[in-house]
Length: 115
Image 1 (cartoon, rainbow, N blue to C red):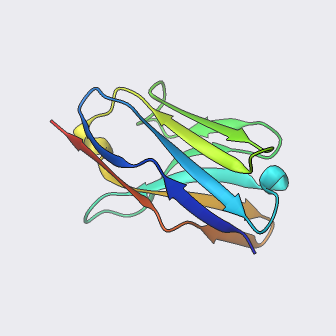
Image 2: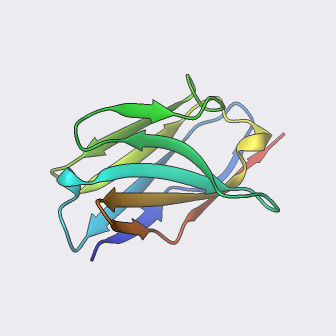
């Protein structure tokens, strides 16, 4: 079992920045693919960014160039640095861990970007 706890969300003005953290416990995440997803009100949950266990990084087109995913295996933590935030980035952000057929979600952290 992997427990994921997100933090760092909040209210920020458009153009501002936030850094989300996802602290994992229960298992070391070094062999897990880690990702961030988000869900805006009335919309489906969507992929934001992924950091594979082998070091590959992927981003949704909507955040490319503005968001940076990173991981610190020693701290068992994944981060999402979000710059140049836009009102359309407003959503609940979820941390996700997957290895083989095992996958885990965090409870989410709210990010609200005001115009």
